[in-house]
Length: 379
Image (cartoon, rainbow, N blue to C red; front, side, top):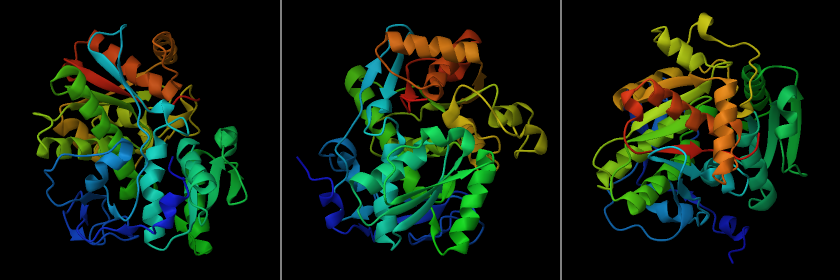
C-alpha cells in the first residue's frame, strides 16, 4: 500500500503545458496564485493540450493527463455509481464514501499540492464544514508541511473535524458570507494565502474528477451517454467543474452530447433559484438570504453574488434547470436513498428531490437517464 506521505515527497510541480483561461474574456496566462483574471477579474479554468490516448490507473490517478501537476501521484480512491430501484433511470454517484465522507476530498487532493508547487504552505480557509475538512484532513494525513487557519461560523463549528497541531480553528459570530470576508482580511493582514473559494481553479479541477469518473461508469453500465446530471449548490463550484468535465469528455468522444445540468437548492436558502426565476442577471439585494437556515447545512450560502453569472451560463447552455425543494421533499428523498443503502446528507438528498420535482412538472431537463451527485454522507 502507498504510504500517504510519499505523495508529497516527490515535490509536485505545475505542468508547463497548461494554462489559465478566463471564462469571460478568454485571456490565457500561466498558472499562478492569481485566481481571478488579471484583465477583467473573471473566473478562470485550466486548459490542457489535446489528449487522445487511453487513460490508465485507478481513481483520480486515472485522470492525471487531465490534471494540472507533474511529479505527483494522485489518490487512487474512487466512488461507486449505483442505479436506484426507486426512481426510473436515475443513478447515484456516491462520493459520500470518500475518505472524509464527501466530494471535497477531491478538491483538496488537487488544490493542496498545487499550492505547495506554487510555494504556499499556510492556507486560510472558510467553509460550512466540508471544504475546511478536506484541507484539515490533508494537513493531518498527507502533507506535513501544510498548516491551516479555519474560519467557521459559530453555527457550524461542530462540523469541523480532523483538528490537530497544524490546524487553528477560528470561530466567528457571523453568517458564512461574513465569515468568508473575515478570512480574506485575516489572510491579507498576516501575509497568508486564502484558498480562493469559488475562484480557485485547482479546487474545481479536483471536483471535475467526480464527473469524469461518473461518465465512465455510466457508459460501462449503459453503453450510452447520460442525459442529465444533478448537484446541490452553495457557490456552485461543482457546476462549473462539471461543465469542464463534460467538455473534456466530449473531446475524448466518450459522450455524444453535453448533459443537461440541474442545480438544486433548499427553499429556505435559494438565492440562485430565486434570482433566476425573477429574471435577474446578477444577485440583487432582494435575492440575498441573510442568516439562512435549513436542513442542508452544507449549502447554506445566502449570497453567491460572484458565482451566479457563471452558473446561469452553464445551466442555460446545457438546457438544464434551477430548482428549489422544501424540507418534506428533502426528508422523503433522504429516506429513499437510505432504503437504497446510500447514506446521504440533506444537501446530497436534495438532488433526488430536485429530479422528482422536475419530473412531476414534466421539465425537459430531467428527461432520459441521468446521475445525481451524492456529494456527502454527513449533515
